[in-house]
Image (tube, rainbow, N blue to C red):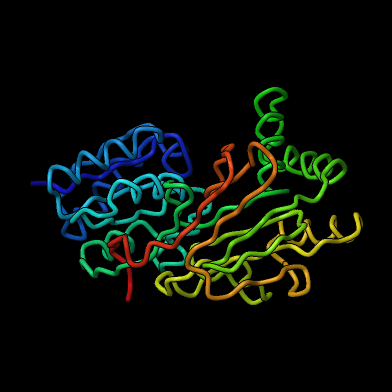
Length: 295
């Protein structure tokens, strides 16, 4: 039976290329994979992936960005279906950190090799994320940016610049209670970052991960700063040029509870913004996802 291939028609290279389905089929065929390619809406990816897994398929190939890959991962955890990734989104952070080639033909050859690797995913109140989550400045900026784009038709870059300035002008530090594994502490911070495995902050490879199977959450707390210092630190964070003295890193985290006196917290999960009532319970799901990736 042909291998199911789901492509998110709404984003990245798929939206930009009307012939991408044929190109994907050709690349996989040349690599020796008999594939049935299907264009789907991004919101249908998790449901379609779950159906493939329930059918008992050994492999599902998904093409898109991090949101699409994350939706598929959510459906495949705990099943016998492996995930093959075609990095066809805009940023493709998860695929990059796994070492999956950006070139379509090379990615197809990797999938054909069948090299399996088990990697971690992270979870917040039952919702899976493959990259990172944030509370504070960043999700508020994303909400403002997306609202500008819908109402005013601004470009993503311009809208984010305006959103950053407005958010920084009116933002107050949030008081959060963190329970790390079993230890509790209160912090005042403009930004809490929770990553699936350790994120690098150095200039050599900012925002990248060297491993996705270390079994730990990456927890970074931005230091409380003056407004000018906060603006500078936030700009560095947006440009992925964070300095070591901007953030406090908490090591050895497998479980994290975030509580607040607020009724709801605005949270980003792999770039998608949600409002959730605290407490927020984060945990690492060790080696929960089987992917085709270089060892």
